[in-house]
Image (cartoon, rainbow, N blue to C red; front, side, top):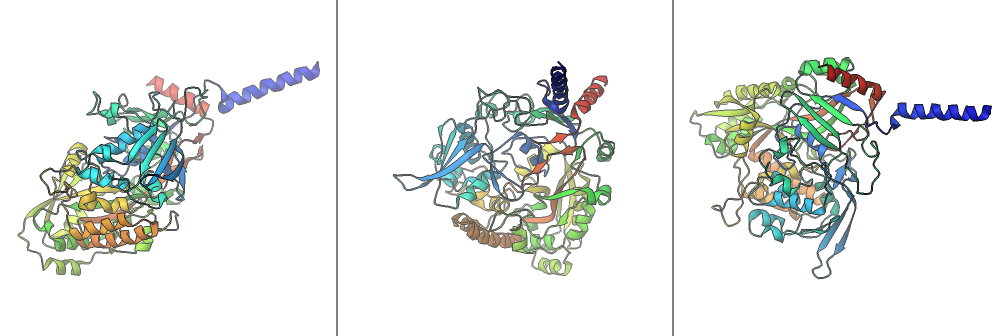
Length: 573
């Protein structure tokens, strides 16, 4: 009898323990208050990314075929396996992706056709998409983008609901394509969402957006909150018996936009939030030893409109780039930014997909961190300057970027070039950028791949991703949004695509970058790093090679108690 009672007591204690540890069937997981970044206006993954923080959100709610881990290894995303075969009739190489069973946030089955639609959308002549050239290894992709072939000629097809077929233009190192499809811009998209009744705001509305990632968007309010919750349907099938913690551990991630960075830091120090992805610039040095830092694959840059006045002269553009004191600008912008020594940022792979194989280190310093005013003035001797005033367009409420702009304007004044700063709202800025309605424009130039190709290819006319102009030459292609167009550079990027091995492509990419630095349609200023503070209460975070965080396995200590307190506080408001 005593033995029976003891066993019953043990069972009761074990049950209580399991419930306390989060095994209660009603336990959905931790609610984690954090600060990821500022408000985002558009989470369409195929849109041009001009804000370095956008990718932090899109990688939470979308997932592609593969994932590039921080160490460079290629890991399965939605593709559980892949293999190649030779077409028996044509001899062409065909790559097959077998998709995992997964669903969209509204429960619809995720299909291979959704990748086909997303990629055809990118390659449509009517769509502006700089990421389009990431798909140019696919048979007929370049010709489709130009309008020379129809979208049905593209070498991509859904064999069935879960098998995606990709036919290549030529034999290549397959890892090059596996790296490309890890891009946040090449995730699946639903045609019924993009072309539906909410076509104008589907990518900014939690009610209308369709996502396939580990989390789904629940709120995105300007001046309010950005909330994501674990997707009920992530990696699930009809017959899955899904427990609340089966694939994604946290229940909800909450970012509050309404508080300043100073307030966010105060909340972190008070234990009110558990992850902080930004700091007030003046506080960075105080917390440097506690930060986890990783390259963000983003270069803050000035784009020059190469069709406007002296900006059409490569000597003038090069002079304006050389005149910048990038060390001083990095110090003014703060928060771990580094002087840009090339167009391609830190963190990009070179001949191997390993952290030790750095494109930037291999390419060396193509641009000096210090200003070289003597060289800049010498270059301007060959420029006809009529004294016109130009505008430098920046986004409103970006103090660090305004500091960089002011430093640049002061430097250019020494060259006799008059520039005024023009601040625009996000919407107006995006319109100006994509319509080339600017003289000089400052933006976060985000790499859409861990290859230098994504930074460099869009400046080539045939790779720009711009909307095709039927009034242009026979190819239909139009230049980059800077209106930069040089046959030598186009040929340099052609050489990249013609190379079939990683080593050969790396060599061609280094040649292309050196050439682009000379033509200078872009003046890279600083390299961004992603940095964050993580509470001792939080664990289980992982990172991608893009410098973004994976919260799927995040754990928060005593989260049941914290959840209860948080929900009680919310209900009292």
